[in-house]
Length: 560
Image (cartoon, rainbow, N blue to C red; front, top):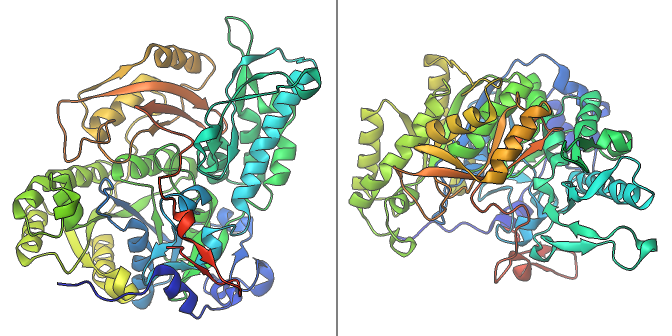
């Protein structure tokens, strides 16, 4: 059975007739003079929108653990928003901005897919309104100030061997992971080791995503720890000690404001900020979500990767920071991905195999329980493919019925909002029938290890946590400088519930190893790295960049 013929994502996007951005803004109750257009189809929203009272109902889209089979979380997010709008609901979509590194590396694009995209697709995937460039500039300004301080006599006593602030670039470039800088003699600076992280892993990105307003932005920037002074006390040196926060905030003045675009069907979409889901907290900005809640009756937002990563961080970090109360969650899965979680090789996923599907259902059950333990009602969204058999579909439906799990099939990739109406109807039903009793997983006043272990045991299903000696020492130091009462941001592989990306399904009898713990004092959380997590990805043997083209008229192809 063949799949329906659907043009490429970029072909669909280029054929679309976009509404003027002023018309889209009018759906939010905004006049033309209340927005700052970037061309005809993009605009910056006023920051004060995020300060207005929230009246919308918040719906989070998350997923099972990602596999090469594909789940389609962003596509479902866009499709659900389009479907709610087709049902005459006043809905606003809120998504992260794509990073150039993955766009030119593996993804080829990150603005939804098929007939469930946000537009203008090319601009969103490329430079957009310049937010990422502003974040990189502010980040690297702080780096320049650090090295200038060293070269000018180092009045703060900053230890060049213990500088923890890297440089950043929004491109996958493995050659920049470890480098030596300041070579060439006294006139060229102080030699030291340096490394680069990709912009979505920058703490400045996390700060922009969590800051409430300009004052909060500046205070967070000032709290950034760039390193420590020489000596056993390891006294932290902060961006504020270097006088960096005002200049950094000036570079971020416009980047803090949310961006307004539209879905393929013309509905309002706020696309802003882009912290990674495995390295950082993986959600769009707080000001974007709050602006959406102030202007829509329903808000659809998305968290990175599976419920063990993006959703947990959304609930435990973002909702605390923004006083948000999610009222429903959509958990995206496919029968193909569940069969892969059940041990079926990728090459055989289109072959009917009810047994493999049955073995994969405990993985789905775990993610459902992850959402439910936060007190949030959940709807399973199954992206349907023509290769799904009746027996396989019946098996999933029977499992959902026996576990009191609301479920709906979607076909938003091929049919847009129309293909998501069943899901939208089910979400609306859950919103009316099942009240949210949202609660975070842990108390932030608990010790750092207790918070890490709560996440590892209750969200991942681990038996316990082991700490590398350096990680254990740093936990003690972070608690001694006042970072013990913050949430924890776990940096873990997205491909498994464990810290081993090869262990699929629903593993048991495992422990999590925390290899490194650091403080993101400006963002307001502690980062615990589990396993081998790269903050600067590399390119694949055949990067998406080599398949992209532009003709003589400036028409782009190859983005997807």
